Length: 325
Image 1 (cartoon, one colour):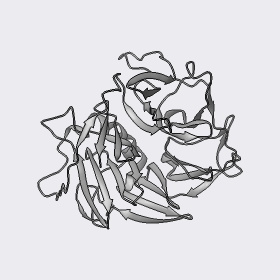
Image 2: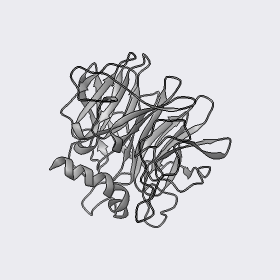
Image 3: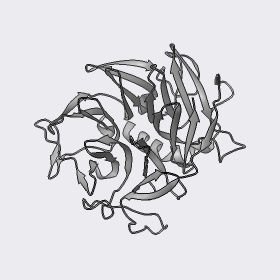
Image 4: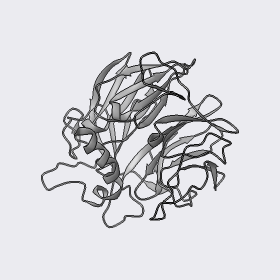
């Protein structure tokens, strides 16, 4: 029952719930500082941005769960980086597919998150239940091996993989969302479980010596250090409340990023807000505005922090926002 509820939440977050007011009359909201933000106009295509990453040369890679492709924005220009047009359903929506091939011939079903990996990029292909690797000239499937996890012809089989994170030593972390677990893949391709028993984990971020987790189904943010989890913020009750970290409320958060000073940024998806955790408290730095649907977040998901700019993917408004910190 819980999985069915969360599956509906992933859809509703971008189609229905984001249209509602983010709070009821008895909800306490403290927008301490609404920071300057703008739309990334260079991404001038019809897409549903889900995940985002920035390369060392400043190129921005964006996963598109509508077109089932990956876009590259550099020097003010947007171009297709991986994937290609796929057949459409009766409603004219691309259906995607599964094909490991050259970057321009590969097919994806639901490219969710993207991070730098090896000599290219790792992409969680959620509906295909795999992690893909974008090499300089082709797309491959990460053929991780395991003696304890479910295996298929192409390696470990995930159940709706979403968030990704990479630690400096080369270990790749994957949110195995519908299994309620975080998997870890070693540099030599061996997969194991870092932690299980979670409620639909999604967005991940490695910072310092810890893995930060958006535990979407539990409406809270976790920090996992040497396999031991602790709650960073969120009472566990769904809602929209700022204040002390342990009493704050979120609604199905799906993205997390951490700054060099330890500040944690959260894509509070169903609330249509970007939240900030610092000094033991939560505040809100951007929230949907019913009178200005074009320039405010509606259903934020992927986050990427580069210098003093926080990139925010919004799957509902089909935009990427840039917030100056």
